[in-house]
Structures are given as C-alpha cells and as structure tokens.
Length: 127
Image (cartoon, rainbow, N blue to C red):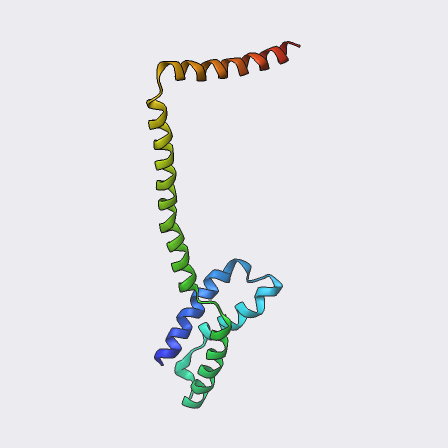
C-alpha cells in the first residue's frame, strides 16, 4: 500500500503540472490515465485487483517524469544565480576602483575623447 501511495503522490504532482494542457491532444491521454488512478477508490477493490492496479501503476510511473527532481533542479539553478550576480558585482566594483585611481590628466583625456565624439555626431546632425 505504501508503494501505491508513492505512485499516487507522483501522479498528483504530474497532473498538477499538466492541468493547463489537459485539453491538448498530446497531453490528454496521459492526463486522463493519471487522473483515473488518482480518483480510484482502492477500498472497494479486492486484493487481486489492487495487485493488478499496482502493476499498471508501476508501468505508468516509469513513463512519467519525476516532478520532485525537476523542482530541486530549478531551486539549484535559483541558488546559483546569486553567485553569478556576485561575480558580476565584483567586476563592476573593480572597474569603479580602477577609474577612481585615475589621475586628473587621465580623466580630462577621457572627457576630451567623449566630447570629441559628441562633437562629431553634432556636426553630422547639423549637416
């Protein structure tokens, strides 16, 4: 009975994931098959019927993805994202620190280059 409960839990997760697409032809059969087992009342079944249902559930279980594994993969990716953000922040901080060490002549040279670029675009606009 414990194995059947595990199958039903997995089936419920899969059906919840398929709920939006249950009317689409490629998902309808799977959704309906899984829903059949979820709605099934095992208390009215004989031992032999339960054995047969369990065997069928095992087959279906092998075909379905493990949603819990997919959810843990997603949470792992979310966990890694801040690490990428931290690396990016460090690179930005390095650029800011490097520019903070510029001498007055380096700053004026950067301003002159940018102003000359702006001047070229302004001349182009005037023409």
